[in-house]
Image (cartoon, rainbow, N blue to C red; front, side):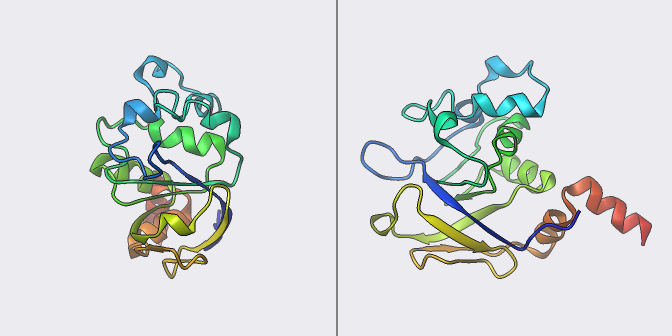
Amino acid sequence: MQKDCTITGKIWLIIDHQNTLINDIDTDMIFHNQYLAITDIDKMGQYTFDNLEGWKDFVSKAEKGDIVIVGKNFGAGSSRQQAVDCFASLGIQAILAESFGAIYKRNAINSGMPILTITDIDLSELSQKEKITIDLEKGTVSNQYINIQPFSKVQFDIYKAGNLFTFGKKIIEK
C-alpha cells in the first residue's frame, strides 16, 4: 500500500488552561491501563485521552483526518502499543510534538504512524481546527508558524510501506 507524502487536516492543539502545549503526556493519559483488555483496534479510539485532564472529551470532537499537536515528552512511560493504536483507530493522520518518549516513538514509527518533532512553533498564531498540510518527504508544514524535523530515510520508508513488518517483507523479497 503506497501512502501519500502529503497530508492535510485540521489541528488539535493539546493545550492547558494557560494556552501552552501540555508536556509529559504519558501512555496512561493517552490510553489508560483500565482499558488494556481491549484488543480490537477499532474500539480503542473511544478511550483516547480519557485520562488527560481537560481533554476527556477529545474523542467526541476529533474527526478522521485530524492532526494532533502536543508538547514535550509525548508518550512517556510504558511500551503500551494501544497508546499509538488509539489514534489510528480515530483516523488521526499525524502527531506533532516537541519531543517523544523513546519507546512511544519507536512504536509509532514501526506502526507507520506519522510522528514529527516540532523544532519551532508560535502558538499565538495558531488556532484550533486550523487546516495545515504537511509534506512528510520534505519535512515542511504549510503554516509558517510550525517548523518540524523531516522524517529520517528509514522512518519515511516504513511509513510508505505501511508499517515495519511490510517494510521488512519488501527488503526480504528484493
